[in-house]
Length: 379
Image (tube, rainbow, N blue to C red; front, side):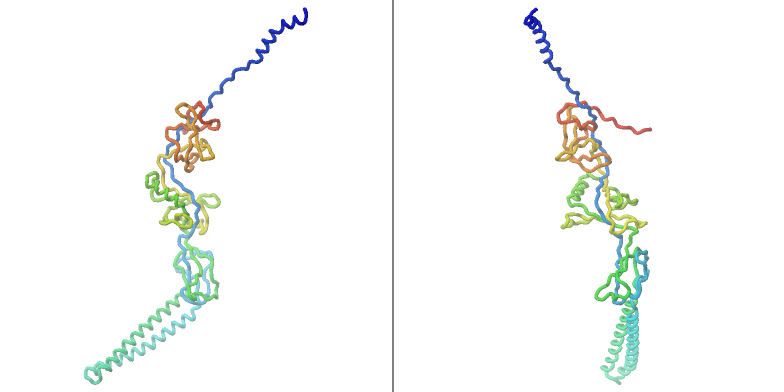
């Protein structure tokens, strides 16, 4: 058998083999993504807002000198508690005692003049009836009595003022609280041309926490309340305080003041809460976080945070439409409530939101969806 003849016999087989090798298998289509869905939760939720606040004393009493004098002694320990009537400072009383003595001496002189004037008027009274003296002389005697009586009233007023000023040399507090540092040392002249500030007594068994709200937020809250979207808390808004170390203060407070004007420089509205502070844990000047609960919001729409995607323009979720396809839905979100977002706009109660498997989705693809199993409480 010659070589060309063998080649002719093998050629058809080789061609069939090459043709078979050139065929590719048909790809099997991928199954639809498996996802789990759930409709949004509809619930009544608390309406809470968080702000930065500052603690201030419930009452601050400035201790001031009401007369001019030299501080003779200080009678309190700085930072201690004081009660109404406690003596805080004394001024040098010698000049005031001298003024009082002079006023009393003035009264004694006026009394002598008054006694003489009355005696003279008493002598002239029967004589004028008998025309033994002129009516003018008697009139002068009566005027002398009236003048002496006026001088006596002035002298009594001088004594009262001198006694009052002498009392002012003993400077007392009219409020219970904790007194701060002495602002003026002993030996210094105070009260010259103004009532010198000597110290401050702060009442801190109850405190104020002041904070501000942007005018736009205050307006939105007012409109929501008027529209019935927010039901106010019975008894007023409740304030809870978080301290700088992250701990929550054990006493809740009440909102007791909201300013009726907007600060033109900052565009904010001032608010204030009052809290009981029996152990004086909250000190004036302390910066805290205020969690203000205004009331409740009925029929709020909630979705789990893990279902929400962050996008360049905001937030979105995937929902399953009537054709069993994924559809991206843009949302307007509010605050967090536990592990859920509050949805302001973008979802309805009947929407089926993809809770699990959201990472593998894109708009328009068919999906195999099943309801998300909800856990039931154990008996």
